[in-house]
Every structure is written in structure tokens, then in C-alpha cells.
Length: 275
View 1 (cartoon, rainbow, N blue to C red):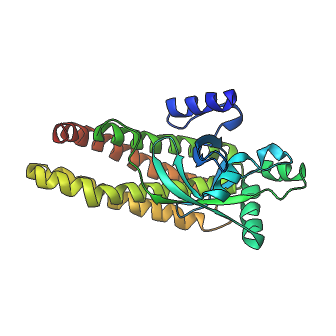
View 2: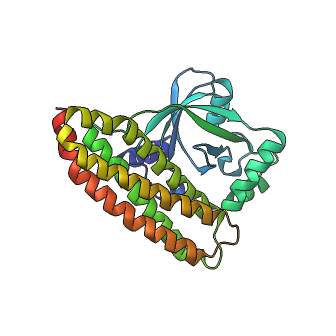
View 3: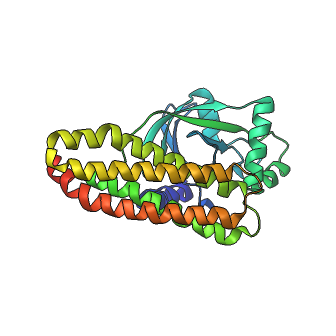
């Protein structure tokens, strides 16, 4: 309990980043106790499975018993998920049969540690899909702070991807591919939200801001083109890592320029509009 508390506090203080055993896990689950009915929060390792879904695996380090959070989700599939920037509601689905085996194989391909845990126990380690049911706002006190947090999350993901490329050698690991695709999906979701909500709100409130909004929308189109090209390259299982890296570098340059410009232009306006 003390160990979990320490990890949870570190996670929340550092926007989802923790070290040690849970380095890279980046998810906190708050489930409803199967017996107590009380909320319980646990850090978990996870595998991003595309389309906004996450796989969580009840390895419990290869122990003979399923983790408590798994029993909680079987009893009550609704839960709250924290990824460091966003807090959202989700629904859990326990995979069975071939679906479970295929999902577990994908996770093992990304991290052989899951197979090592399975070899230590006679139980079938459960695999659970988490799918968001309602999005929550970033864990921030204001709209401008929320924008900065989301942008910094993208910056961190880009830095991680580039670091992983340096370690990838001649082939692209599955996890690196998934990280790239998850970043692309996150950018699409964020920019769609801005295009449909924030930009119309600011354009209506401040007509003189329209040229800036036009520039930001144009940036979104360009970044969408780059992410589409990156995804197309990643679809090739034999993609040359150096070719993919070049695409990531192009996306990084364009995205960093866009994020810097958007913060310089939007944050002062949002601070006034929301005051």
C-alpha cells in the first residue's frame, strides 16, 4: 500500500511520469472494490492497442492470484483512468479465448516481460481492454494551463519516440510503431477538438483574431498530412527505420513550431476570455 501510494503521488506530481518498476506505465486506474464498494487506485502497466484503446494485463508479477483491480473490474466494469494529462471515464472488457490470446501475443511482441510473468504461474493471465466512455478535461486549473499541459505531453511523446529510435537498431519494434500511431491519433483528436470548439468560440468572441485562427487551421492541415505519411510508412512491416526517423523529424519540426506559435497566440487570449 505504501509503495502504491508513493507511485500514485509521483505520477500525479509529474503528469504521468514515474521511475523504477512502473517507469513507462503511465496509467492510474480507480476501480470500485468488489467487496467494499469503495474506490481503489492502482498504477498499471499497459499496451496502447490503437483506436484509443488500451490493454491492461493482470500479470501481478507472475503471482498465483489475479490482482485485486481485476476482480474489481469483473464486478464493476466502469472505472476512472488517469494518463497524467487527462482523467476520463472508461469501460473495461475482459477478453477471452482467441481474442485474449491474440491481444496477449501483441503485448508480448512489444515487451517479452509479459511472457516471463506467464511462465511463472499456472493461471491464465487476464487481458482487459479499456475504452473511454466520456472524456474529461485536462487536470488543470484553467484553459490556458490545460493547453500547455496537452502540448507538453506531445513534446514528451516526441522526445520518447526519438530516444526509442536511437535504440531500435535495424528494425522497428512493435512498441515503437504503436507509440508513433498513438501520437498521431492524439494529435488528430486534439486538433479536431480545437477546430470544432475552441477556434469557433474565439472567432465569435474576437473577430480580429480570425487571421491567427486561419494560420492555426492551416498548421493543422499540414500536420495531418505529415501524420498520414508517417502512418503510411509504418504500415510497411519492413520499413527502414531511418526513413521513418526522417518522417518523425519532419513532423517534430513542424509540430514544435506550431505548438510554440499556438501558445504565444492562444494563451493570452484564453486568459482574457476565461477571466
